[in-house]
Image 1 (tube, rainbow, N blue to C red):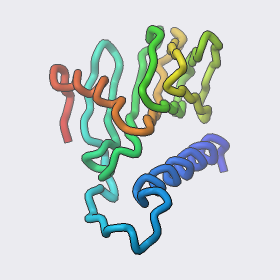
Image 2: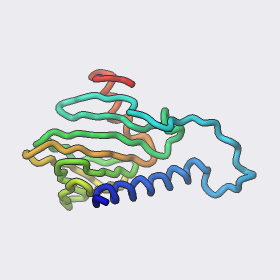
Image 3: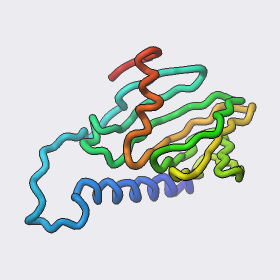
Image 4: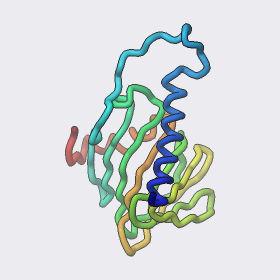
Amino acid sequence: MHKSIVNFSLILCGLAAIAALGLSGGHASAEQKEPRAKTYSYATKGLMEFQDSGEHWKLLLDESNLGGRELEMAELTLPAGEVVPGHHHGAVEIFYVLSGTLGHEVNGEMHMLTPGMVGVVRPEDSVRHIVPKQSDVKLLVIWAPAGEAKKYFDRAKDTPIAQK
């Protein structure tokens, strides 16, 4: 099996475990849990897409189709030569590189991420992203817990490509 598929599978298994813990209510016993109505989608092509300054965003998962606030997931394409200034997040941010190269600078330490690699940012970290001029980079971005996507997708109200 291709190395990037294995890495991606491991990420998704880890996220499924996080989501399962959140959905189960932690350590409560079976008799303490109340049955939960199905509030999630079993399959989706995403919720919303928009393009802004060459960045292409596609929101894949949020509370509306996941049924909880355990995580959010987006597909992001950053254009060649893009520099995203230093910033912080209120949640863990995980990048999985689908294509291209991403300069992933965390707390002043640069990491060049290529397809199949993962980058992680914790809320206390300062992060900056640099896309080399050779080509765009396409990423899967996961935030846990949810809440970060709003910062980006609120812009979609002004510049929508499509809403699903």
